[in-house]
Amino acid sequence: MTARIIDGKAVARKLRAEYAERIAGLKTHYGVLPGIAVILVGENPASEVYVRNKIAACKDTGIHSELYRLPADTPEATLMARIDALNADPAVHGILVQLPLPPQISLPDVLERIAPDKDVDGFHLYNVGGLVTGNTVFPPCTPFGVQKLLEHEKVEIEGRNVVVVGASNIVGKPMALMLMQQDATVCICHKKTRDLGQFTLLADILVVAAGVPGLIVPQMVKTGAVVIDVGINRLPDGRLVGDVDFEGVRKKASMITPVPGGVGPMTITMLLHNTLVSAERAISAGR
Ligand code: NAD
Image (cartoon, rainbow, N blue to C red; front, side, top):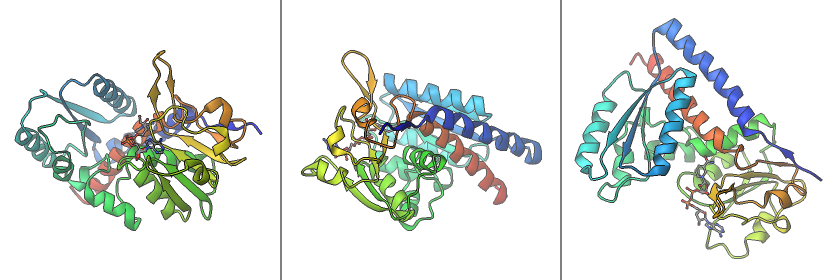
């Protein structure tokens, strides 16, 4: 068997075109321009790239973006005051604080300060709680992107065995909850899991988000499984790879995402989606 390669770039392009139309419609019918505020604290080079890509994607899709740069030694109170001002600004539908934050700032406190109605990253406890009960407003972007890819590829979820490798708050845990909500039987593995392969072998759908290159080899994959590789790892020779041995596993899986070009392009696309939905909700609520 040779897996069909899921083209995340193509799916992202298609969805972005749909969102651009909806955004143009909001402007025409309601005079509303969806807006996102991005706060970047410090000068982490990776964060600079992520923020640049997010802002470029917003521009391409017709979302207004504002970037607030704060120095690395910014006191927490200054950041909180900025968030408060953005919470109160009706032109801002989404607030994104780029992570990681410098050590003097408490991440949980910052995430709770963002109004749940503008929490387009989906990290506020209100939205995390919504994942548990199945009525979240803003699902977190990376697992949401995986869910959209599976939907686009018409992968049946109900009653299937899903194994998620990785249990972080931003990828693994929400991913597991989202697929459980779609009636999959879900197992979460992490770095303390003993004999990872005995679990991954049960997976009809295997989602890997560990940050360990080459973690998943063909012997750990069931023939015909759908394999979604969320990992992004930079090798010493400069190559970008996922967590799955792509060349080996593609001979066993029925579908597989490449790295780059699989899940990556979907993450920012879901940020655009959540910002659009936030603007639509604000219009419905008369805000
Ligand atoms: P994290 O470091 O917060 O969490 C990693 C998780 O993997 C932990 O739960 C840990 O227990 C588990 N893990 C680590 N080693 C393991 C092992 N040997 N066996 C089983 N489990 C193991 O990372 P994260 O933020 O969840 O990101 C995971 C990966 O996904 C990283 O490579 C990251 O770059 C990538 N990522 C990609 C996107 C995207 O848009 N494609 C977005 C976010 C993260």
